Structure formats: structure tokens, C-alpha cells
Image 1 (tube, helix red, strand yellow):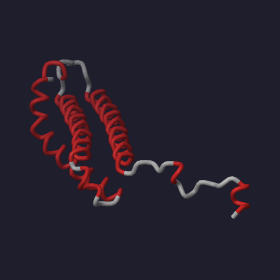
Image 2 (cartoon, rainbow, N blue to C red):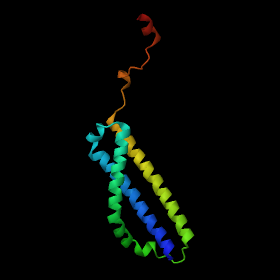
Image 3 (cartoon, rainbow, N blue to C red):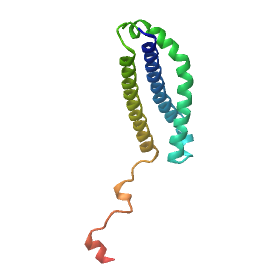
Image 4 (cartoon, rainbow, N blue to C red):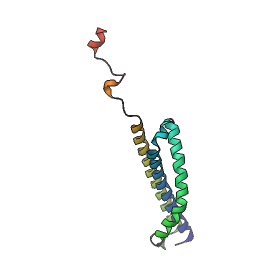
Length: 139
């Protein structure tokens, strides 16, 4: 495998590991520190959790990428016919797909978090409920 193709493959593996750890850290921070995030507003809470998750994921990927690369060394780098441009295209496609999955995962976690923080209003207690016309005429 050419040196450029190996670098693209390493970048792909490290990027996927980073995005996976980002989603895991975001979910863990959301669940574990739920009471602390309630003190902040919705936007501040989301930005703070994303910042902390990015920091934790970037630190964790530094230690974990060497282990993953050693485990995948035989399978990930065995294709000797792979050109640099094909490896670059595979890396871009893999990173784009991993980024899409990470974005969807973070959005789903945030939706569940907001649903748990502020449960929906019951229809019987809602102020916007319209009264039937005969009750409104009696008033």
C-alpha cells in the first residue's frame, strides 16, 4: 500500500473513532449530569455538552487510535493495489457517512433530553383549548 493511501486510511479510522466517541461522550454527559444542564437554557446546555463531549472525545481518540490501528493493521492495510486517489475518496465517503450518523445520533439524544426535561402539557390543563360555542355564549 502506498504511503499516501495508508495515511488516508489512518485518517479515516481516527475520524470514525473520534465521531463515535463524540456521540458516546455527548450521551453520557447528557444522562449523568442532567440536573446541572437544567440550570442553563436550552442553547447554552446544548453548546456546553457539545464542547465538553468534543474535548473528551479528542483526548480519548489520542489514546485509543493506536490500539485500534494495531488491531486493524492486517485487515485495513492489506490491499496493495489501492491508489492514493481511491483511498482518499474512500476516506472522504467514510468520514461523511460517519459525520451524518454522528449528527443524527446527537440530534436524537437532544430530542430525548428535551422531552424528558419538559414533558408535554396535558390537553385538559392547556390554556389554549377552545371552548364550545354554547359555553362561550353563557359567559
